[in-house]
Image (cartoon, rainbow, N blue to C red; front, side):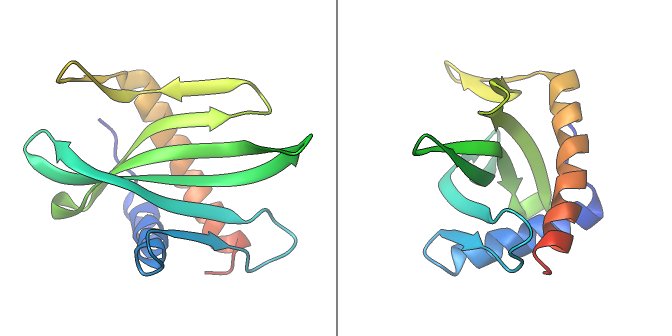
Length: 135
């Protein structure tokens, strides 16, 4: 599995901490020129032998009164190892849903190529979020 790089890990932890300090969710809009980012702590679970947390991060737009993810990603945060693994990607406008890490009847399944690609995208996205929201 591919985790976020060191720089993106730091940005992710900053965003996750902000959500955790605000009852598990936060919407950050520090710059009106860019879409707000929403961060939500979804649930805690066991990822193999480690305690982990699933977070969702998203930009949302609106179409005909419906919220549209542009994009939304879920991440598995293994705090003990300081590792963040992108698990899924959704873009409603493009009709894309990709789940690369998931549990199926007690067995973890991983699409190595897809998950690696999500990590590369997320590394760039974290830097963009930091810059756009002036963190």
